[in-house]
Length: 91
Ligand SMILES: [Zn+2]
Image (tube, rainbow, N blue to C red):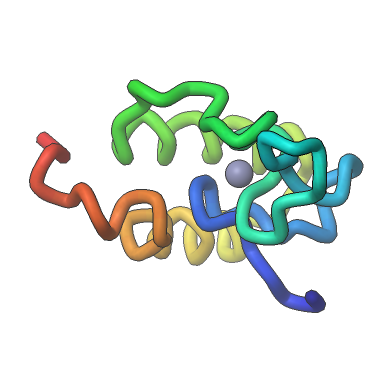
């Protein structure tokens, strides 16, 4: 799982202290982090990709991630699995 990123926010899962989100049956979900995905559902289902970018930008800043790295992570957010399938609903 080294190098795996959350498919919702793009955050590397190694930074997730919970080690990933959880499925409806309580098992670990390897695609999404614990901030985005809990018990088989997105924690903020109505979030748009633009709102996610803003949110992640703030989180990365708090985590003292260098701006260059942060920008790369944010740039890839729209390509992640969560957003790729409903690109049409993005403003
Ligand atoms: Zn996430």
